[in-house]
Length: 234
Image (cartoon, rainbow, N blue to C red; front, side):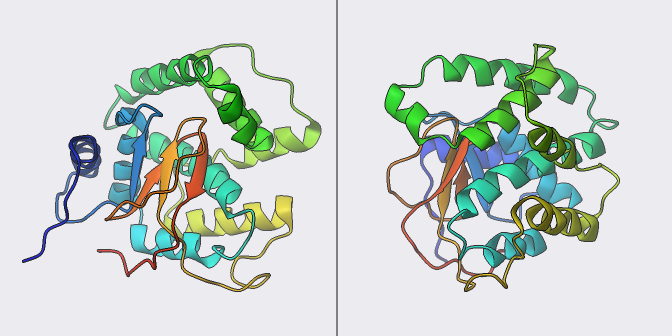
């Protein structure tokens, strides 16, 4: 039997995802890491909770549906903010410690921003960064950044409710892209499989692929080498 090979950091990330999902019979499609390569514990939990509460293969298909857009990276970043809020609300009654973990993740956001180089800052999408800063400022009790009326509407729209099921989440994601970007996944541009990606806070990663899925950088999701994505594990 062929087994996937993982680095130590990837194995730790996978274990966090498995523990959050409460199952160990799948290979994660998303993993989260900080710029120094250490696993992002909170966002790996989010990835696992998405697996627990929602139909990940269907969500994966939705991510693939806008792979032909030149704004696909930004769409990923926006929509994962929505997913984060959704699964947080779903899981909180069962896992009250999430409130503290979420606040710690908010503080980590500001710590990481202080260590970014000028080049890393230049590679960030400022509209996405504004939404991330607003989210984490709200969570941590800091003074939120000033947003334009449109940006405020975007922030509100990204508070996906924990009452949504998979159909509701997909509809919310589709409506979000159409409302704010006039983009309909799968129609405006040619559909093509999304490449693997690494998700790392505030940094556009170097080109390298990850077997088993896409690594999440909670700051800027960046597609890597265009390897074809197979059908995910159920």
